[in-house]
Length: 460
Image (tube, rainbow, N blue to C red; front, top):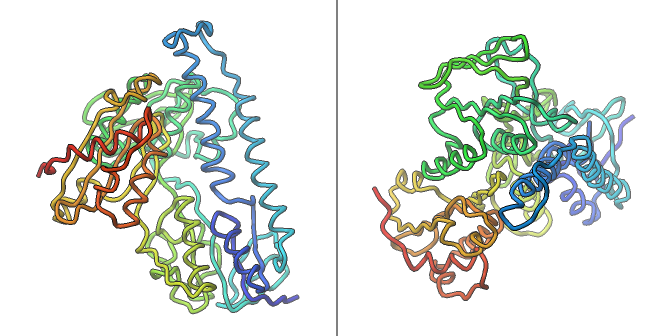
């Protein structure tokens, strides 16, 4: 049986439902296909569940510190992981079911459950059905990368997806990978009561950040008793009497770490290997990501790729923006491009890191003459009042144009404060717009204008 549509959307991650709403709302007949869980990574194994559990871990952390605030909450909070998991599951299910209900009730939209595969550049098979359309939008997301480390097959391990389903506190969690996934889960389970060792192959954590940011993050985690092992050039595994053993070829520290559980937090790969893309002659790069132009079009006319599977963002907000770009170009007569997007993201350890634009390293590499200003959170009164003074803020501006090049806010509220800088960057306004603004006291944001009055040449 063959059904014809004006557009077919593969996947219900962040880009898919929004695009379905826009296309169906324009009067086109839309098919949207989901092979697994509605909502994709963000709703099911990414932002929603992890940040829900981060919130529980934060409460546990605050409970332990209650005496610092003059509150007697007992000597030790009891962590009930079954209830932590149940709260997370309930929030995820509400988001997932709400999305499915909305899609299934959408006018001009038909939902298909099953694994979609290309039969040609205009035809998709889903189970025993064939769907045809002149426009196909690929939004199939990604999954955890499982590296070929020696001995890994001998031990049980978690990925970021499977670790969300545990209802117990691991005694000693060995985290492989010192970036976003590894650090967020590492701190989370340390606060739940696990011993945690984070193993990173590189010389520092979160290598995409400047060295001062990486060093501050490491200090924050070590202050909570997390063990950090850097320069682990060669990692292998074996099974010990109590659990997995990680063998490390490190510049310093013991050559082995014995734990009870392992988390692999070493990146993600796109879900593009089983779509039949070769039948549609859609190009992928050497890592499996679908290659797209500045407007998300693939090399095949009438086929677009959005979200994590195109390798052009890998965040919920960039995936959603992909859909906005496609909808604007297709339906609104607008001209929007990926290259208009300013890189921005957050690392949800506590305190969080909000990042936007260039790092100092990138500015030096591009030869941009820049001015920089920093301020430790110990000099931010709002942070002092909250008892959350770890981290620092940094803003970098172009010495000539006075436009803001980038910023990093590692501290309480950093993931929210960064937007006041991001919006001015999109406006291409000089930093003096923020410097002369009157911000509310007492907030973290109020220190941004003060900092911008203390700019100095960036060290070479």
